Length: 313
Image 1 (cartoon, helix red, strand yellow):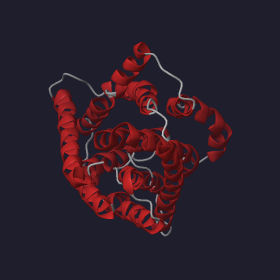
Image 2 (cartoon, rainbow, N blue to C red):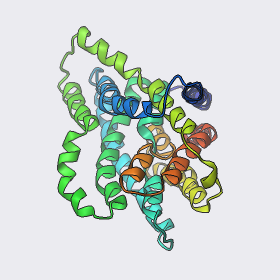
Image 3 (cartoon, rainbow, N blue to C red):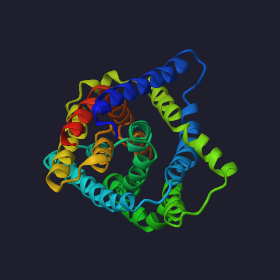
Image 4 (cartoon, rainbow, N blue to C red):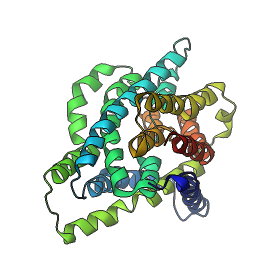
């Protein structure tokens, strides 16, 4: 990790993401793509590209020091995710309203896969992606347990189907496969490894194009003046990253491990927020506003977060 260039690289990477978002936006406005394209792109990303990227991150030589860092990453990831959930619950404990559950979900869960993974890959390469994959394991466990419990008004169904849903998640299966390959140092032939690498490289452009399509197909003006929207964004973009930074500082979780965990927690609201709003009948405009506006704000907040991470060392 070149710490002297951390802020500059983060700013450059976020700017490139913004240009890709703009490309998706203009493609819809120019009628090169339609609103339905995001469904197909999202399915491709979640079910094929992200798993390929996760497996690709494990295709490196075994290093005892990295293995030790994986354990540190697991502890830090679980801790900051639970801290984020607690902050979301405490900050809304006195608030009521039909959309409170989706607001809590948006506060708790970041867009770590869509925006965080490309950023970590650009900053830290394969080793950083290993740590990001560990974070993603705990992230997915929490999102399909506590996350679904937050938004599902009849959570019994979620509880019954929880194990099945987890097993079906390609990202979690990819983590399991990747760990076996890494810990067992199983050689992967070039004819297999190279297509995996090429698929992994699609993550950044595809995920940003999806965000651009969402912006182009969303009517955000009615929700921009909403206090609850800005309150949720404040918690997601400032309070939770600050708490994560403080936790890593107090526990001595520095270096690449601390940087990866903090930056992933500093990402904007999860893109899944909009999907769950539709599925569980919350305000779709509010959910889209949370995702889009927090994504736009991350152009400023992620480089600032990188600056603080660099100070932590």
